[in-house]
Image (cartoon, rainbow, N blue to C red):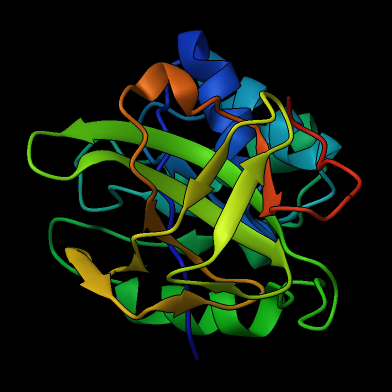
Length: 217
């Protein structure tokens, strides 16, 4: 199994960043503190995932703490989100208890991406940062088609075209593969000079082709 794990900010001030990350996902782990219970950001992030029709796996973490009350948190998940308490995973990231159940739950409960390898390329731009030696590095999710090093792509938002100089996956370090397939999340280097050119939520597609932009801009 190939899984792309995307960490998102927990604070409510980062709802836009969270929504952009969720656009590349088929499901989420909703992590709730066993002592503190459901917080404001938990509610906000739940509804972002719910409105995106994503599979939601509740994870009650920090069950090792003296003040932990996982049964109370289970009831909160039921009363606030209508999530079945039996679906909640009980974990402690500190001691390792319960962590062996997380990856199997992702595999069993979260569906694979729905895109088509044979369709025209549509790539969602998730994030970017500037590297002193390589220029702008973009994090992308390939929704449809195949993206290859050496190809030319165009921004649906700006109309600017670029050549893909490098492409690969985060493993977690940048690992060149030369291509990204439908459903994969990875990085591309295109010679962009500034992160202002990399608009979060933009659709990148093959140059000289016309596609329906992805929701997100």
